[in-house]
Image (cartoon, rainbow, N blue to C red; front, side, top):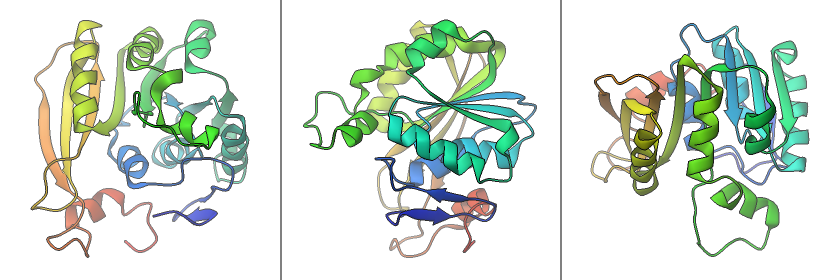
Length: 238
């Protein structure tokens, strides 16, 4: 998905020449899945091409801030947002989340992130791709601490991660007072193991709402009805 230099959605186009991480299933899943009810201030950490920020703009009337540490990706995200139907509601900041969390003078109803998750793995020779894929520059501890600081009392943190990393994140989040309140287990096909967790955290403890999602039907050729229904407002062919 999305290996061309652009990706056309129903209501916006995303250029992806400069950003190391191209449009992928994880980001679109998260952008379509996140609970945006009554959200007025949304923060997208590691915005990349800006796709999740744009999805948030399409789904809400909120003011949206995208944070991106890699300069070329930040420039491309700005261009994508400028060319979208919602340029007045999205701002892209070229900065680290650590610095933003320290200096921002307001908090958010929703913080959303499709974060880098490789740790101590062999890195790409492409420095931009290494930044996008590895969490050396933003550890889970830093992401959670900053999110806790910048979330409003009733705000939510929404993320997607592979299962192993997600379980580590859930444990760390609980220690920091961010409680898992919603979980969707994602399978590529019905006969495969769960390979992604879609997670929503809040500052108050609540019973976890848990469900599951399969992206493809058996055989892996056709998208499932559930996946189509979730993403139909975005993909041209759904």
